[in-house]
Image (cartoon, rainbow, N blue to C red; front, side, top):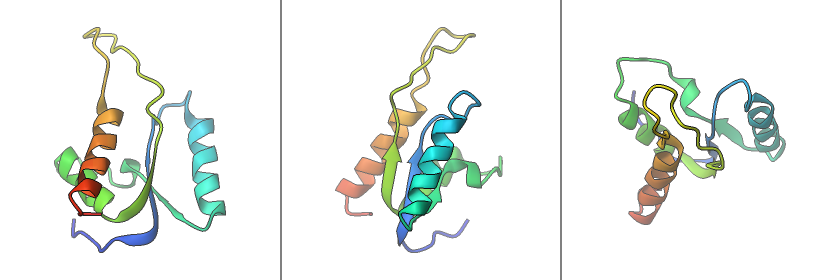
Length: 102
């Protein structure tokens, strides 16, 4: 995927994407659109051949703003460990911003 230049109207949304969270996700998307911005998230590209981190970095590079809801951490049923993908994505966004990449 070619990296586009940063779009001042794009907002990266980092939140859970399960059915339980769906009404909140829809409200976030609505608020972003109502504010005149373009919502963006990792659900846009389902190409499994892409490395997840590369896909996320490319998407984050295209967004000037972000919304991160890291309020829900659940334990994986199989491993008993929490998934920290949402805090990782927040760290990626903040790191890129601090490095001047955003």
